Amino acid sequence: MLLETKERFRKYHSKEEYDRLVELDTIPEMWEKVTKEFATNEALVDGKTYTYKELEEAVGLYRKVLEDNNIKQGDHVGVFAKNSFDLVKMYLAVTTYGAVAAILPAHLDEKSLYGVSMMFNLKALCYEEDQASKLNVIKSLNPNCKLLSATLVGSEATPINLNVKKEDSAIIMFTGGTTGRSKGALLSHEAVLQGAINGCYGMKHVFGQRYLLILPLSHVFGLIRNLMTCFYSGSVIYIVRNNKDMFKDIAIFKPTILVLVPAIAEMALNLSKAFNKNMLGDSLKTIICGAARVAPYLIQEYHKLGIDLYPGYGLTESANLVSGNPENLAKPDSVGIPYPHQEFKIVNDELWLKGKNMMKGYIGIPGANEEAFEDGWFKTGDLVKMDEDGFLYITGRCKEVIILSNGENVSPQEVEAVFNECSLIQDSQLYEDVKESGEHFLALEVVPRMSELQKVEVEDKMAYLMKELEKINQSLPPFERATKIIIRDKDFERTPAMKIVRYKKC
Image 1: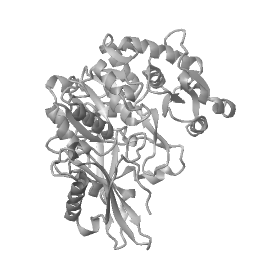
Image 2: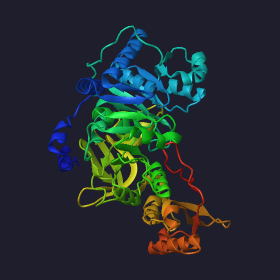
Image 3: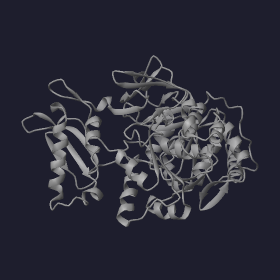
Image 4: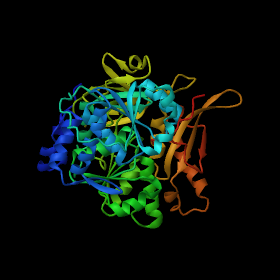
Protein backbone atom coordinates (compact mmCIF):
# COMPACT_ATOMS: atom_id res chain seq x y z
CA MET A 1 0.00 0.00 0.00
CA LEU A 2 1.45 3.41 -0.98
CA LEU A 3 1.11 5.96 1.77
CA GLU A 4 0.00 9.53 1.21
CA THR A 5 2.43 12.30 0.31
CA LYS A 6 3.44 15.15 2.58
CA GLU A 7 0.15 16.85 1.65
CA ARG A 8 -1.55 15.20 4.61
CA PHE A 9 0.62 17.28 6.95
CA ARG A 10 -0.21 20.63 5.33
CA LYS A 11 -2.93 21.49 7.84
CA TYR A 12 -0.45 21.40 10.72
CA HIS A 13 1.72 24.19 9.22
CA SER A 14 1.37 27.77 8.14
CA LYS A 15 1.48 28.16 4.35
CA GLU A 16 4.84 29.94 4.58
CA GLU A 17 6.48 27.17 6.61
CA TYR A 18 4.92 24.35 4.60
CA ASP A 19 6.22 25.83 1.35
CA ARG A 20 9.73 25.93 2.84
CA LEU A 21 9.72 22.17 3.46
CA VAL A 22 11.66 21.33 0.31
CA GLU A 23 12.67 17.70 -0.10
CA LEU A 24 16.41 17.34 -0.75
CA ASP A 25 18.40 14.29 -1.83
CA THR A 26 21.87 14.35 -0.27
CA ILE A 27 23.72 15.63 2.78
CA PRO A 28 26.09 17.73 0.61
CA GLU A 29 23.09 19.34 -1.14
CA MET A 30 21.44 20.13 2.19
CA TRP A 31 24.63 21.39 3.80
CA GLU A 32 25.44 23.73 0.90
CA LYS A 33 21.90 25.09 1.01
CA VAL A 34 21.76 25.79 4.74
CA THR A 35 25.29 27.22 4.98
CA LYS A 36 24.33 29.79 2.35
CA GLU A 37 20.76 30.48 3.46
CA PHE A 38 21.58 30.66 7.19
CA ALA A 39 25.26 31.69 6.95
CA THR A 40 25.23 34.20 9.79
CA ASN A 41 22.75 32.30 11.99
CA GLU A 42 23.99 30.44 15.04
CA ALA A 43 24.39 26.73 14.25
CA LEU A 44 26.11 25.05 17.18
CA VAL A 45 27.11 25.87 20.75
CA ASP A 46 29.80 23.81 22.50
CA GLY A 47 31.70 26.14 24.79
CA LYS A 48 32.02 28.43 21.77
CA THR A 49 29.19 29.52 19.46
CA TYR A 50 29.60 28.76 15.74
CA THR A 51 27.55 30.26 12.93
CA TYR A 52 26.69 28.09 9.92
CA LYS A 53 29.46 29.83 7.98
CA GLU A 54 32.02 29.23 10.74
CA LEU A 55 31.02 25.61 11.13
CA GLU A 56 31.38 25.01 7.38
CA GLU A 57 34.83 26.64 7.43
CA ALA A 58 35.95 24.09 10.04
CA VAL A 59 34.24 21.24 8.15
CA GLY A 60 35.91 22.29 4.89
CA LEU A 61 39.36 22.24 6.46
CA TYR A 62 38.72 18.74 7.80
CA ARG A 63 37.55 17.59 4.37
CA LYS A 64 41.06 18.59 3.26
CA VAL A 65 42.48 16.23 5.91
CA LEU A 66 40.49 13.39 4.32
CA GLU A 67 41.69 14.38 0.86
CA ASP A 68 45.33 14.60 1.97
CA ASN A 69 45.06 11.08 3.39
CA ASN A 70 43.80 9.70 0.08
CA ILE A 71 40.29 8.92 1.29
CA LYS A 72 38.06 8.23 -1.71
CA GLN A 73 34.38 8.82 -2.31
CA GLY A 74 32.52 5.82 -0.94
CA ASP A 75 35.23 4.77 1.52
CA HIS A 76 34.04 3.82 5.00
CA VAL A 77 35.39 6.20 7.66
CA GLY A 78 34.77 5.77 11.38
CA VAL A 79 33.84 8.74 13.57
CA PHE A 80 34.71 8.07 17.20
CA ALA A 81 33.93 10.79 19.72
CA LYS A 82 31.57 11.83 22.46
CA ASN A 83 28.92 14.42 21.60
CA SER A 84 30.95 17.51 20.77
CA PHE A 85 31.82 20.10 18.16
CA ASP A 86 34.56 17.70 17.00
CA LEU A 87 32.09 14.88 16.41
CA VAL A 88 29.75 17.12 14.40
CA LYS A 89 32.67 18.57 12.40
CA MET A 90 34.09 15.13 11.54
CA TYR A 91 30.68 13.65 10.68
CA LEU A 92 29.81 16.53 8.35
CA ALA A 93 33.27 16.48 6.77
CA VAL A 94 33.07 12.75 5.99
CA THR A 95 29.54 12.85 4.56
CA THR A 96 29.93 16.09 2.58
CA TYR A 97 33.22 14.76 1.19
CA GLY A 98 31.34 11.75 -0.20
CA ALA A 99 32.73 9.09 2.13
CA VAL A 100 30.56 6.95 4.43
CA ALA A 101 30.53 7.90 8.11
CA ALA A 102 30.31 5.05 10.61
CA ILE A 103 29.20 6.77 13.82
CA LEU A 104 30.72 4.66 16.59
CA PRO A 105 29.43 4.64 20.19
CA ALA A 106 31.88 6.50 22.42
CA HIS A 107 31.80 3.75 25.06
CA LEU A 108 33.48 1.15 22.82
CA ASP A 109 36.66 -0.31 24.31
CA GLU A 110 39.83 -0.78 22.24
CA LYS A 111 39.16 -4.44 21.35
CA SER A 112 35.61 -3.65 20.23
CA LEU A 113 36.89 -0.66 18.28
CA TYR A 114 39.34 -2.90 16.42
CA GLY A 115 36.58 -5.44 15.73
CA VAL A 116 34.34 -2.74 14.30
CA SER A 117 37.15 -1.39 12.12
CA MET A 118 37.40 -4.83 10.52
CA MET A 119 33.66 -5.52 10.37
CA PHE A 120 32.92 -2.19 8.67
CA ASN A 121 36.09 -2.23 6.53
CA LEU A 122 37.17 1.20 7.75
CA LYS A 123 39.75 3.00 5.63
CA ALA A 124 40.22 5.61 8.34
CA LEU A 125 39.11 6.41 11.87
CA CYS A 126 38.50 10.04 12.81
CA TYR A 127 38.74 10.44 16.56
CA GLU A 128 38.77 13.07 19.28
CA GLU A 129 41.88 13.23 21.45
CA ASP A 130 39.99 12.03 24.56
CA GLN A 131 39.61 8.64 22.80
CA ALA A 132 43.26 8.29 21.73
CA SER A 133 44.06 5.78 24.50
CA LYS A 134 41.69 3.27 22.86
CA LEU A 135 43.57 3.10 19.54
CA ASN A 136 46.42 0.75 20.45
CA VAL A 137 44.84 -2.48 19.19
CA ILE A 138 43.89 -0.91 15.85
CA LYS A 139 47.42 0.47 15.48
CA SER A 140 48.98 -2.97 15.93
CA LEU A 141 46.42 -5.23 14.23
CA ASN A 142 44.85 -3.03 11.55
CA PRO A 143 47.58 -0.67 10.31
CA ASN A 144 45.69 -0.12 7.03
CA CYS A 145 43.09 1.93 8.95
CA LYS A 146 44.41 5.50 9.04
CA LEU A 147 43.99 7.29 12.36
CA LEU A 148 42.98 10.93 11.93
CA SER A 149 42.75 13.16 14.99
CA ALA A 150 40.05 15.80 15.20
CA THR A 151 42.83 18.31 15.87
CA LEU A 152 44.19 17.98 12.33
CA VAL A 153 43.54 20.98 10.08
CA GLY A 154 43.94 21.13 6.31
CA SER A 155 45.97 23.85 4.61
CA GLU A 156 42.87 25.03 2.75
CA ALA A 157 39.23 24.05 2.50
CA THR A 158 38.19 21.21 0.23
CA PRO A 159 34.80 22.10 -1.30
CA ILE A 160 31.56 20.23 -0.66
CA ASN A 161 31.24 17.26 -3.01
CA LEU A 162 28.07 17.93 -4.98
CA ASN A 163 28.67 14.89 -7.22
CA VAL A 164 27.27 12.60 -4.53
CA LYS A 165 24.09 10.84 -5.68
CA LYS A 166 21.01 10.21 -3.57
CA GLU A 167 21.42 6.43 -3.74
CA ASP A 168 25.04 6.59 -2.52
CA SER A 169 25.78 5.31 0.97
CA ALA A 170 26.02 8.04 3.63
CA ILE A 171 26.21 6.58 7.14
CA ILE A 172 26.52 3.35 9.08
CA MET A 173 24.64 3.20 12.38
CA PHE A 174 24.94 0.55 15.06
CA THR A 175 21.76 -1.41 15.70
CA GLY A 176 20.54 -4.62 17.23
CA GLY A 177 17.88 -4.74 14.50
CA THR A 178 15.21 -7.40 14.50
CA THR A 179 17.72 -10.15 15.33
CA GLY A 180 19.20 -8.64 18.48
CA ARG A 181 22.78 -8.98 17.19
CA SER A 182 24.86 -5.80 16.90
CA LYS A 183 25.58 -4.87 13.31
CA GLY A 184 25.66 -1.86 11.03
CA ALA A 185 22.65 -0.43 9.20
CA LEU A 186 23.81 1.19 5.95
CA LEU A 187 21.75 4.28 5.10
CA SER A 188 21.80 6.19 1.82
CA HIS A 189 21.88 9.96 1.46
CA GLU A 190 18.23 10.07 0.43
CA ALA A 191 17.29 7.99 3.49
CA VAL A 192 19.09 10.39 5.84
CA LEU A 193 17.53 13.43 4.18
CA GLN A 194 14.07 11.88 4.18
CA GLY A 195 14.50 11.21 7.89
CA ALA A 196 15.64 14.79 8.50
CA ILE A 197 12.67 16.38 6.75
CA ASN A 198 10.23 13.89 8.25
CA GLY A 199 11.21 15.44 11.57
CA CYS A 200 9.66 18.71 10.40
CA TYR A 201 6.25 17.38 9.40
CA GLY A 202 3.43 18.05 11.85
CA MET A 203 5.32 20.59 13.99
CA LYS A 204 3.73 23.94 14.76
CA HIS A 205 7.05 25.76 14.41
CA VAL A 206 9.93 24.38 12.35
CA PHE A 207 12.56 26.96 11.41
CA GLY A 208 14.87 28.94 13.66
CA GLN A 209 14.40 26.79 16.75
CA ARG A 210 16.76 26.26 19.69
CA TYR A 211 17.63 22.57 20.18
CA LEU A 212 19.47 20.86 23.01
CA LEU A 213 21.52 17.74 22.21
CA ILE A 214 21.20 15.19 25.02
CA LEU A 215 20.93 11.91 23.11
CA PRO A 216 24.14 10.37 21.74
CA LEU A 217 24.79 11.05 18.06
CA SER A 218 25.73 7.37 17.69
CA HIS A 219 22.00 6.69 18.15
CA VAL A 220 19.83 7.31 15.10
CA PHE A 221 17.27 9.34 17.09
CA GLY A 222 20.00 11.74 18.18
CA LEU A 223 21.71 11.98 14.78
CA ILE A 224 18.67 12.27 12.50
CA ARG A 225 15.88 13.89 14.51
CA ASN A 226 18.04 15.95 16.83
CA LEU A 227 21.01 17.07 14.69
CA MET A 228 19.99 16.72 11.04
CA THR A 229 16.47 18.13 11.44
CA CYS A 230 17.98 21.00 13.43
CA PHE A 231 20.41 21.87 10.64
CA TYR A 232 17.83 21.34 7.88
CA SER A 233 15.61 23.93 9.60
CA GLY A 234 18.36 26.51 10.13
CA SER A 235 18.11 26.07 13.88
CA VAL A 236 20.84 26.11 16.54
CA ILE A 237 21.88 23.18 18.73
CA TYR A 238 23.49 23.33 22.16
CA ILE A 239 25.61 20.29 23.08
CA VAL A 240 25.17 18.95 26.60
CA ARG A 241 28.56 17.48 27.54
CA ASN A 242 27.37 15.92 30.81
CA ASN A 243 23.75 14.90 31.31
CA LYS A 244 24.10 15.70 35.01
CA ASP A 245 24.34 19.34 33.91
CA MET A 246 21.29 19.12 31.65
CA PHE A 247 19.01 21.36 33.72
CA LYS A 248 21.77 23.90 34.28
CA ASP A 249 22.38 23.97 30.51
CA ILE A 250 18.65 24.36 29.86
CA ALA A 251 18.52 27.39 32.16
CA ILE A 252 21.46 28.96 30.27
CA PHE A 253 20.49 28.11 26.68
CA LYS A 254 16.67 28.28 26.92
CA PRO A 255 15.78 25.69 24.25
CA THR A 256 12.46 25.87 22.43
CA ILE A 257 12.45 22.18 21.46
CA LEU A 258 13.83 18.99 23.01
CA VAL A 259 14.28 15.52 21.55
CA LEU A 260 13.94 13.06 24.43
CA VAL A 261 13.37 9.43 25.29
CA PRO A 262 10.39 8.85 27.63
CA ALA A 263 12.57 8.04 30.66
CA ILE A 264 14.22 11.49 30.54
CA ALA A 265 10.87 13.22 29.89
CA GLU A 266 9.45 11.40 32.94
CA MET A 267 12.41 12.43 35.11
CA ALA A 268 12.10 16.08 34.09
CA LEU A 269 8.38 16.05 34.80
CA ASN A 270 8.85 14.49 38.24
CA LEU A 271 11.50 17.09 39.14
CA SER A 272 9.24 19.88 37.89
CA LYS A 273 6.50 18.67 40.21
CA ALA A 274 8.86 18.15 43.14
CA PHE A 275 10.27 21.69 42.91
CA ASN A 276 7.01 23.28 41.72
CA LYS A 277 8.93 24.75 38.80
CA ASN A 278 9.18 23.86 35.12
CA MET A 279 12.69 22.39 35.05
CA LEU A 280 12.73 22.53 31.24
CA GLY A 281 12.37 26.29 31.10
CA ASP A 282 9.69 28.72 30.04
CA SER A 283 11.00 28.93 26.47
CA LEU A 284 10.33 25.25 25.77
CA LYS A 285 7.26 24.68 23.59
CA THR A 286 7.85 21.25 22.00
CA ILE A 287 9.15 17.82 23.02
CA ILE A 288 9.69 15.11 20.42
CA CYS A 289 9.57 11.81 22.26
CA GLY A 290 10.42 8.34 21.00
CA ALA A 291 12.78 5.32 21.03
CA ALA A 292 10.43 3.65 23.54
CA ARG A 293 6.74 3.68 24.37
CA VAL A 294 5.37 7.12 25.30
CA ALA A 295 2.79 7.08 28.09
CA PRO A 296 -0.34 9.21 27.41
CA TYR A 297 0.18 10.54 30.94
CA LEU A 298 3.31 12.39 29.77
CA ILE A 299 1.44 14.04 26.90
CA GLN A 300 -1.35 15.22 29.19
CA GLU A 301 0.90 16.45 32.00
CA TYR A 302 3.22 18.39 29.70
CA HIS A 303 0.18 19.96 28.04
CA LYS A 304 -0.70 21.41 31.45
CA LEU A 305 2.73 23.10 31.42
CA GLY A 306 2.05 24.59 27.99
CA ILE A 307 4.37 22.12 26.23
CA ASP A 308 3.34 19.94 23.28
CA LEU A 309 4.84 16.46 23.60
CA TYR A 310 4.64 14.55 20.33
CA PRO A 311 5.18 10.76 20.27
CA GLY A 312 6.58 9.00 17.25
CA TYR A 313 7.95 5.74 15.97
CA GLY A 314 11.06 4.84 14.07
CA LEU A 315 13.90 2.41 13.55
CA THR A 316 17.58 2.67 12.83
CA GLU A 317 16.78 0.81 9.62
CA SER A 318 14.28 3.51 8.58
CA ALA A 319 16.60 6.48 9.19
CA ASN A 320 14.74 6.85 12.46
CA LEU A 321 11.35 8.25 11.47
CA VAL A 322 8.44 6.08 10.29
CA SER A 323 5.54 8.01 11.82
CA GLY A 324 4.78 10.98 14.04
CA ASN A 325 1.68 12.06 15.91
CA PRO A 326 0.52 15.66 15.40
CA GLU A 327 -2.81 14.75 17.08
CA ASN A 328 -1.13 14.04 20.39
CA LEU A 329 -4.07 15.06 22.59
CA ALA A 330 -6.80 13.44 20.51
CA LYS A 331 -4.90 10.16 20.02
CA PRO A 332 -2.30 10.03 22.82
CA ASP A 333 -1.66 6.28 22.57
CA SER A 334 -0.87 6.38 18.84
CA VAL A 335 2.57 6.76 17.27
CA GLY A 336 0.91 8.81 14.56
CA ILE A 337 0.65 9.14 10.80
CA PRO A 338 3.17 7.33 8.58
CA TYR A 339 5.49 9.78 6.85
CA PRO A 340 5.64 10.23 3.05
CA HIS A 341 7.48 8.08 0.51
CA GLN A 342 6.91 4.80 2.32
CA GLU A 343 5.00 1.70 1.44
CA PHE A 344 3.72 -0.51 4.20
CA LYS A 345 1.75 -3.65 4.73
CA ILE A 346 0.71 -5.57 7.81
CA VAL A 347 1.47 -9.29 7.66
CA ASN A 348 0.18 -11.39 10.57
CA ASP A 349 0.01 -8.15 12.59
CA GLU A 350 3.68 -7.33 11.81
CA LEU A 351 4.59 -4.08 10.05
CA TRP A 352 6.56 -4.47 6.80
CA LEU A 353 8.10 -1.42 5.13
CA LYS A 354 9.60 -0.14 1.88
CA GLY A 355 10.56 3.44 1.02
CA LYS A 356 13.11 6.20 0.48
CA ASN A 357 13.98 6.26 4.15
CA MET A 358 14.80 2.54 4.42
CA MET A 359 18.34 1.27 4.81
CA LYS A 360 20.25 -0.37 1.96
CA GLY A 361 20.92 -3.32 4.24
CA TYR A 362 22.96 -4.59 7.16
CA ILE A 363 26.70 -4.95 6.98
CA GLY A 364 28.96 -7.00 9.21
CA ILE A 365 26.76 -10.04 9.90
CA PRO A 366 26.40 -12.74 7.20
CA GLY A 367 22.79 -13.73 6.58
CA ALA A 368 21.30 -10.77 8.47
CA ASN A 369 19.66 -9.28 5.35
CA GLU A 370 18.08 -12.57 4.31
CA GLU A 371 16.53 -12.77 7.75
CA ALA A 372 15.34 -9.14 7.83
CA PHE A 373 13.91 -8.79 4.29
CA GLU A 374 11.34 -10.70 2.29
CA ASP A 375 10.60 -9.87 -1.35
CA GLY A 376 12.13 -6.43 -0.83
CA TRP A 377 10.07 -5.68 2.28
CA PHE A 378 11.79 -4.95 5.59
CA LYS A 379 10.14 -6.90 8.40
CA THR A 380 10.19 -4.54 11.38
CA GLY A 381 9.41 -7.14 14.03
CA ASP A 382 6.83 -4.72 15.47
CA LEU A 383 3.22 -5.77 15.91
CA VAL A 384 0.84 -2.97 14.92
CA LYS A 385 -2.71 -1.96 14.21
CA MET A 386 -4.11 1.03 12.35
CA ASP A 387 -7.33 2.90 13.06
CA GLU A 388 -9.90 4.22 10.62
CA ASP A 389 -8.11 7.60 10.44
CA GLY A 390 -4.82 6.03 9.38
CA PHE A 391 -3.08 6.40 12.74
CA LEU A 392 -0.62 3.69 13.72
CA TYR A 393 -0.46 1.89 17.08
CA ILE A 394 2.35 -0.38 18.30
CA THR A 395 0.99 -3.43 20.10
CA GLY A 396 4.15 -5.46 20.70
CA ARG A 397 7.23 -7.19 19.31
CA CYS A 398 7.12 -10.46 17.38
CA LYS A 399 10.04 -11.96 19.28
CA GLU A 400 8.58 -10.93 22.64
CA VAL A 401 5.27 -12.72 22.17
CA ILE A 402 4.71 -15.27 24.95
CA ILE A 403 3.15 -18.51 23.80
CA LEU A 404 1.21 -20.10 26.66
CA SER A 405 0.83 -23.83 27.22
CA ASN A 406 -2.79 -23.60 26.03
CA GLY A 407 -1.64 -22.15 22.69
CA GLU A 408 -2.72 -18.57 23.42
CA ASN A 409 -0.32 -15.80 22.30
CA VAL A 410 0.25 -12.88 24.66
CA SER A 411 1.95 -9.65 23.58
CA PRO A 412 3.66 -8.21 26.70
CA GLN A 413 3.57 -4.65 25.36
CA GLU A 414 -0.16 -4.80 24.74
CA VAL A 415 -0.83 -5.94 28.30
CA GLU A 416 1.66 -3.45 29.73
CA ALA A 417 -0.07 -0.64 27.85
CA VAL A 418 -3.28 -1.38 29.77
CA PHE A 419 -1.49 -1.11 33.11
CA ASN A 420 0.51 1.94 32.00
CA GLU A 421 -2.71 3.85 31.30
CA CYS A 422 -3.04 4.12 35.06
CA SER A 423 -1.47 7.41 36.20
CA LEU A 424 0.00 5.62 39.23
CA ILE A 425 2.21 3.44 37.00
CA GLN A 426 5.39 4.79 35.40
CA ASP A 427 6.51 1.56 33.69
CA SER A 428 5.77 -2.14 33.73
CA GLN A 429 7.10 -5.40 32.38
CA LEU A 430 5.13 -8.59 31.79
CA TYR A 431 7.16 -11.77 31.47
CA GLU A 432 6.97 -15.54 31.68
CA ASP A 433 8.09 -17.00 35.01
CA VAL A 434 8.25 -20.58 36.25
CA LYS A 435 7.34 -22.21 39.57
CA GLU A 436 9.48 -24.80 41.36
CA SER A 437 7.04 -27.40 40.02
CA GLY A 438 8.01 -26.38 36.49
CA GLU A 439 4.67 -24.72 35.77
CA HIS A 440 4.95 -21.56 33.65
CA PHE A 441 2.91 -18.45 34.45
CA LEU A 442 2.69 -14.72 33.70
CA ALA A 443 4.31 -12.29 36.12
CA LEU A 444 4.15 -8.51 36.15
CA GLU A 445 6.53 -6.00 37.69
CA VAL A 446 5.64 -2.32 37.91
CA VAL A 447 7.50 0.88 38.75
CA PRO A 448 5.10 3.23 40.54
CA ARG A 449 4.86 6.89 39.62
CA MET A 450 5.56 8.23 43.09
CA SER A 451 4.58 11.82 42.32
CA GLU A 452 1.01 10.63 41.66
CA LEU A 453 0.92 7.98 44.39
CA GLN A 454 1.80 10.57 47.03
CA LYS A 455 -1.41 12.42 46.20
CA VAL A 456 -3.54 9.45 47.24
CA GLU A 457 -4.95 10.15 50.70
CA VAL A 458 -4.64 6.69 52.25
CA GLU A 459 -2.30 5.43 54.94
CA ASP A 460 -0.96 2.37 53.12
CA LYS A 461 -0.25 3.64 49.64
CA MET A 462 1.35 0.42 48.39
CA ALA A 463 -1.66 -1.65 49.46
CA TYR A 464 -3.88 0.83 47.65
CA LEU A 465 -1.74 0.54 44.53
CA MET A 466 -1.85 -3.26 44.64
CA LYS A 467 -5.66 -3.15 44.78
CA GLU A 468 -5.69 -0.88 41.71
CA LEU A 469 -3.35 -3.26 39.90
CA GLU A 470 -5.57 -6.21 40.71
CA LYS A 471 -8.60 -4.32 39.34
CA ILE A 472 -6.77 -3.75 36.06
CA ASN A 473 -5.57 -7.34 36.05
CA GLN A 474 -9.10 -8.67 36.43
CA SER A 475 -10.30 -6.49 33.54
CA LEU A 476 -8.04 -8.46 31.16
CA PRO A 477 -9.01 -11.66 29.37
CA PRO A 478 -8.14 -14.61 31.68
CA PHE A 479 -5.19 -15.78 29.56
CA GLU A 480 -3.54 -12.32 29.76
CA ARG A 481 -3.80 -11.93 33.54
CA ALA A 482 -0.67 -11.92 35.68
CA THR A 483 -0.52 -14.62 38.35
CA LYS A 484 2.08 -12.62 40.30
CA ILE A 485 2.39 -8.83 40.58
CA ILE A 486 5.46 -7.16 42.07
CA ILE A 487 5.81 -3.45 42.89
CA ARG A 488 9.43 -2.42 42.39
CA ASP A 489 11.28 0.10 44.52
CA LYS A 490 13.62 1.08 41.68
CA ASP A 491 13.56 1.46 37.92
CA PHE A 492 14.17 -1.37 35.45
CA GLU A 493 17.60 -1.87 33.97
CA ARG A 494 17.82 0.14 30.76
CA THR A 495 19.85 0.15 27.55
CA PRO A 496 22.01 3.17 26.54
CA ALA A 497 18.96 4.28 24.52
CA MET A 498 16.93 4.16 27.79
CA LYS A 499 14.77 1.23 26.67
CA ILE A 500 13.81 -1.31 29.33
CA VAL A 501 16.02 -4.41 29.24
CA ARG A 502 13.64 -7.31 28.78
CA TYR A 503 13.94 -10.34 31.00
CA LYS A 504 15.09 -13.40 29.09
CA LYS A 505 12.41 -15.92 28.29
CA CYS A 506 12.16 -19.01 30.46
